[in-house]
Length: 141
Image (spheres, rainbow, N blue to C red):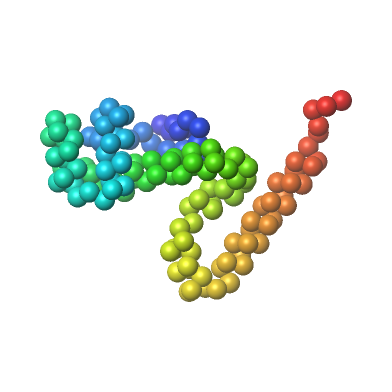
């Protein structure tokens, strides 16, 4: 079963079912924030108090690899949409948000032509979406 995350274009492939997914939302938010601070799992579990008693490093590791990454993308999307609504509305906004500077630099170092392919893709996407908008029937009489 898939569900749409409110106010974002992200779609989860499945409903999460781990121990952390069953915790209250405010506790999951605390876990995500502590993971952002790069706390070690033992400290994180200790800070959760009674909510962390049944958790172990494997639970947190799985959460960090999947759900925490979803949370980070939701956060990035919300910031981009709030700060730059024109950016969030572009057809390739998700692609740009997923480009990490270090990964992009490594790719360009290995394949210098990759950056040109990215630019061509962005230009053609922008042209395609503007031509679609220009040929769409207008709502005004």
